[in-house]
Structures are given as C-alpha cells and as structure tokens.
Amino acid sequence: MLVIQKRIFLLLLALGLVTLGYAQRVQRQAYAFMLDQLLEHRVPEISVREARALREVTFLDSRTRDEFEVSHLPGAKWVGYDAFTPQVIQDLPKEQAIIVYCSVGYRSEKIAQKLRQQGYQKVFNLYGGIFEWVNQHQPIEDKQGHPTRKVHAYDRLWGIWLTEGQKVYELQDP
Image 1 (cartoon, helix red, strand yellow):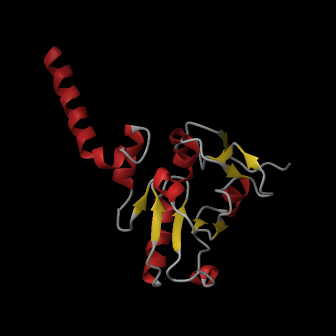
Image 2 (tube, rainbow, N blue to C red):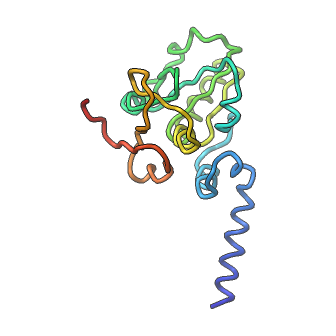
C-alpha cells in the first residue's frame, strides 16, 4: 500500500512540474493544470498581474451578453463569442494593446486568434479569464458601472474555478 501511495505522489509531482510555467500565472495548481489542457496556447497569454501593469489597453469581453451584464472588467467592451464579428472592433487601431477575456480563457483564445488574423498585433488572452481576475481580488463592475462582487459563473461545473466573489448562474431581474 505504501508503494502505491508513493507512486501516486510521484505521479502528481510530475504532473505539477509539467504545468509549472503556467502555474505561476494563476493561484491554484489544479486550475493551471486544467487550463494547460483546455487551451491551445496559440496566442500570447497574459497574467492578471501583467495585465494590471499595462497602460492604454483595451479589454474585450467574449462572454455572452448576460454574463457581461452581471459583471465585467472596468471599462471592458462586449464583443461576444457566437455573435462576434470583426466589425465590432473596427474602430480600434491595429497597434492598440488588446486583452480578450471570458470566464476561463477558452472563448477569448478563439476571439484573440480571429483578431490576430485581422491584423491586430498586440492581442493577448487573459490567462484564467475573469475567474482568475476576481480570484486575485481585482475590481469588476456591473452593467451600470458600479463596483460589484457578482460574477456569472457560467454553470456549476465551471463555477468551481471561481473561488472569490459571489457566483451567479442565472440573470435575475433587479
């Protein structure tokens, strides 16, 4: 039994080393491991800390309109995912720094790829998405622009990665 436990420990340690580079971008090793498997890593990724340090950056939210209306990063522009068209951001200069985000980074990675194909050079995917943003106690705002702690957690399965804030699963009338 001790040999099996030792092998399991070594396997977990090895898995942890595989994601060591990404783990530094999010606070939880399990989240980093999941993101490493989920994302294609075909566009530059940016951590919450790196994103906060940038000046003159445009945040684009690639979640659904309902998710965006619950909360979003301050000043973010909604572009959606299913409804996304390049015309929605045609007013942004091609050299503008752009950070695309969603709940965890999957949808935003796809939108960031489309933006890069359209000639936008400084496009980043927010690694860990709005969940990691909130997990690191960064500000978010509601549809009126007021500070909030509510975050649309997408669904109960994905909501496990949101460890801070107040989870919302359905948009409720005020």
